[in-house]
Image 1 (cartoon, rainbow, N blue to C red):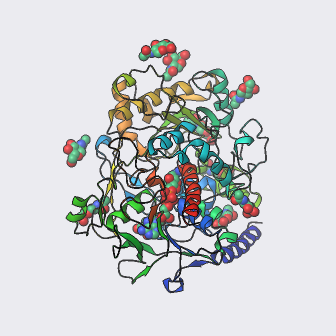
Image 2 (spheres, rainbow, N blue to C red):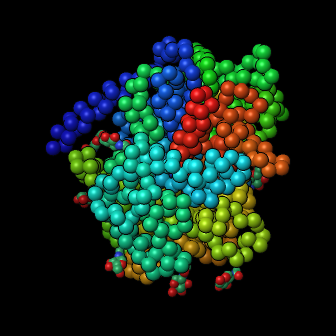
Image 3 (cartoon, rainbow, N blue to C red):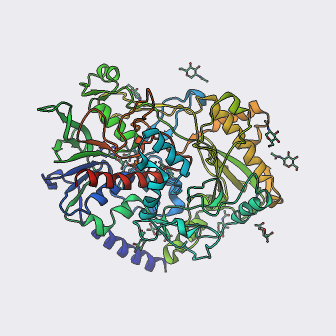
Length: 601
Ligand SMILES: Cc1cc2nc3c(=O)[nH]c(=O)nc-3n(C[C@H](O)[C@H](O)[C@H](O)COP(=O)(O)OP(=O)(O)OC[C@H]3O[C@@H](n4cnc5c(N)ncnc54)[C@H](O)[C@@H]3O)c2cc1C
Ligand SMILES: *[C@@H]1O[C@H](CO)[C@@H](O)[C@H](O)[C@H]1NC(C)=O
Ligand SMILES: *[C@@H]1O[C@H](CO)[C@@H](O)[C@H](O)[C@H]1NC(C)=O
Ligand SMILES: *[C@@H]1O[C@H](CO)[C@@H](O)[C@H](O)[C@H]1NC(C)=O
Ligand SMILES: *[C@@H]1O[C@H](CO)[C@@H](O)[C@H](O)[C@H]1NC(C)=O
Ligand SMILES: *[C@@H]1O[C@H](CO)[C@@H](O)[C@H](O)[C@H]1NC(C)=O
Ligand SMILES: *[C@@H]1O[C@H](CO)[C@@H](O)[C@H](O)[C@H]1NC(C)=O
Ligand SMILES: *[C@@H]1O[C@H](CO)[C@@H](O)[C@H](O)[C@H]1NC(C)=O
Ligand SMILES: *[C@@H]1O[C@H](CO)[C@@H](O)[C@H](O)[C@H]1NC(C)=O
Ligand SMILES: *[C@@H]1O[C@H](CO)[C@@H](O)[C@H](O)[C@H]1NC(C)=O
Ligand SMILES: *[C@@H]1O[C@H](CO)[C@@H](O)[C@H](O)[C@H]1NC(C)=O
């Protein structure tokens, strides 16, 4: 049986590989000369741009990606394996942060995907659009109503196909169909395997609807409350920007070329006959001792290298703080002290509880036989525990508006109907560094995230070589406010697990968490256990219209002070979404594709 299924799946895989490899190029000599647009990075945003611009058969687009193909990688495609798709894989960048001063100088792995699909190929697939207030705040800040919820909402519908969950259960009380799309490239779905904690989570919303209200669909623009988790999954497999926007029918377009395993090392500028520097093209290479090539599009260079990649590339190319560039002997093309500033990321932390159950997912991590059985079931029937990602549900919650923290600090939420913190659950121990999973015991985890943090960090160059990592400093918890919010969320998680729906199931705090009782102990626990969930944004942010506001790109995402250069990825957001950013990046790129089409119409 296994042999047969292996045969079938390898046949399937090889035919898939042939079709989707059809237009993937690895040899720079295979590329053309007459591109209209060159996109740097085949990641979450980059593939949207490449797909939408090549809808116009007259435009030729080249995408240059540093990483490898996503094809046939089981750890990438199987939802359950998402947390093991990183770190230190042949398809990751392997960054680490600088020592985090508010976390006892710990340095942290800082995951980024280096393959087709970028980080959408290695992320946890949690799919959240943010609140309508979030988008309206960007519209207000940028003075561009094109970023309002009203304008963005149709793009959310356009980009997705809401698909039935793998087990085809009744989902009528689990999402609101009218706010979803059913004809877009990206698959979005609900959990597809029954889970022993889901019922208890939902029952808690019935028991205490004031503190923990149920929300039928947190992606409606009305985000607050506890909802069933929506994830970028098509039936049983990950839906990434590569599987969705570079699907065989798109990548086979004669006007789209995707060159992989080539890193862009520089944006080229010329000032000849112009008032400001013009991006004439890019330079790229397979490695420090490989030859360099250049390519020059007739219309635009579009940077979609992600918050780390695009920022590093702008700096390497001479756009950034002139003192930083000069100290590394990089010729200054355009001085802009904002490049690399305003880095925002979400601090996360796992709350572990003992579970009175022998059916948690802990066993799957410890018993290779059981994991193999689950894999066999998944391979043969597309069912079972491997069809789902990290959590069955998601909560977006607020501190009460009279909380004392707001007497000391301004409220960072996008508005009165937007959250401060988040929960996701795991029916088992959720391994987050620095705590590795214990070898015995059965657990429930609430991972909490401060989704509206006040701390701000930086990305700067460590050297003038494109082959060296930049210095990434998310500055986690450097603003005391974020510690106070973390402390509140910990107490809230404990109160949640104290509800009657968990009676007999929750056997109390696991030893790692139980050490934190007083506020001081909780704060120490926060500093020792906070980790990233890899949502960096903001280092090339959109310019604000308010007095004294600065930025890197205008509201059409064109780099200020130069021509022919746009940035389309997470780095342009002026504020962080209170949630997980992939959906917001897809929508940003969808709308910007239309802006580009209008510009060149
Ligand atoms: C482990 C992990 C879990 C996450 N979980 C979630 C989640 O559950 N839900 C969610 O919404 N978000 C999640 N995120 C965040 C989300 O995936 C990212 O915010 C998003 O994918 C970033 O999109 P992007 O287009 O800005 O950049 P990316 O998708 O990272 O794309 C950048 C691309 O550019 C390429 N590139 C960079 N520099 C160069 C260069 N110089 N030359 C050529 N190519 C280059 C990269 O290799 C990459 O392919 C997670 C992220 C990680 C890492
Ligand atoms: C990351 O680590 C893996 C495993 O060691 C390696 O294969 C890969 O090349 C590394 N990536 C980078 C960008 O160095
Ligand atoms: C962290 O490093 C900084 C700078 O090196 C140092 O001043 C500080 O004392 C260190 N903090 C801890 C907790 O070790
Ligand atoms: C989902 O997968 C099926 C089977 O591979 C495919 O036909 C379909 O186009 C995919 N849909 C989306 C939205 O990805
Ligand atoms: C949730 O509540 C319903 C109604 O009270 C009950 O039938 C069900 O058993 C509960 N589920 C769990 C998992 O406790
Ligand atoms: C955990 O569950 C297993 C069954 O898988 C059971 O044998 C064991 O006693 C449980 N352990 C605890 C600490 O509850
Ligand atoms: C692992 O799971 C298998 C199948 O369920 C079971 O037979 C075996 O006893 C388990 N091994 C251990 C060490 O628990
Ligand atoms: C399941 O399929 C994958 C290929 O997608 C293969 O690598 C793996 O070994 C298979 N597992 C089992 C248990 O059959
Ligand atoms: C906030 O208001 C609630 C009632 O609305 C009250 O019970 C609580 O004590 C107040 N908290 C503070 C810190 O004032
Ligand atoms: C920065 O460069 C120094 C000197 O070359 C090196 O020791 C250090 O590891 C680099 N830091 C990072 C984060 O790469
Ligand atoms: C949990 O419930 C018990 C009994 O009702 C109460 O004494 C305790 O304070 C509660 N703990 C939390 C964190 O809510």
